[in-house]
Image 1 (cartoon, one colour):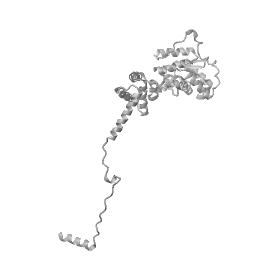
Image 2 (cartoon, rainbow, N blue to C red; image 1 turned 90 degrees about the horizontal axis):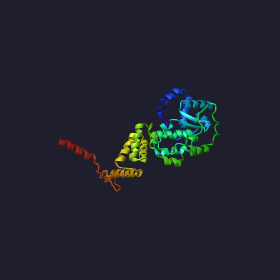
Image 3 (cartoon, helix red, strand yellow; image 1 turned 30 degrees about the vertical axis):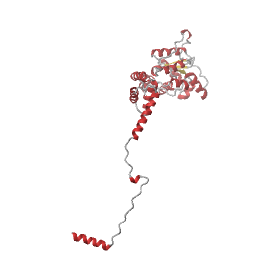
Image 4 (cartoon, one colour; image 1 turned 180 degrees about the vertical axis):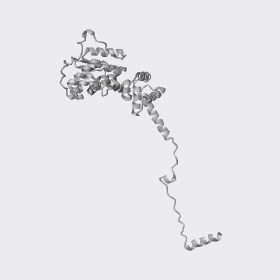
Length: 311
């Protein structure tokens, strides 16, 4: 199950959020719909009223009113029959260009109950040239139109226990851990997690790097840059070095790291060292002290008189 969702930092400058969602509860609920634990890679997921009330602190009437407003402004679509929500522009801002992410969407499409939503997801993927394999369903099998009449909202199902919620989320709306492993790494998603908003220029640049080095090495370079608290330019510098050395796999990179470390140790071992001083050697013995006999007062006076005579 995914534990992170991306929200563009420009959301707060968006005209819809600033001018249409004028009340704080409306802004809160819109952010909740984009980030709650039921969200999926395809943007369609089951909506549980009681859970939403608990998570946001809003009343059922407040939530109904806000949903109506979001439907009116074509930000979401809501199926009262199946208690499903579709975020209309979700796929536009959550890339599925990677075949591995597209495979996750293919799996999620099997769980969508509202066939109109399924069709719209597939159409949007085709429009955005995402490589999903699911074909459009037969139009004759489509269910009744979706909508959200304010007075006819379906009664929510009984609140599941914590363990049931985890199980349903993992099997019905999100890929399992094994599926996540097969769907990772996703270059475009990782970029957004590590460096921020993915614009078209960066997306094209990433695609070129993937063509040159492959998904695995591109993600590895970004991981190294992120661990060093560097930006994407630093990751590109790493990738340029790997491309120059014709490294194609993670094993090649690891082998190159080993060679570099061995070379560094060898250079450190060849540094000229100063010879160890005699006094620092373990078998050093201090020379015996030669004592000079003390001079008597008479000898000292005679010596002083002799010096005066010479002067």
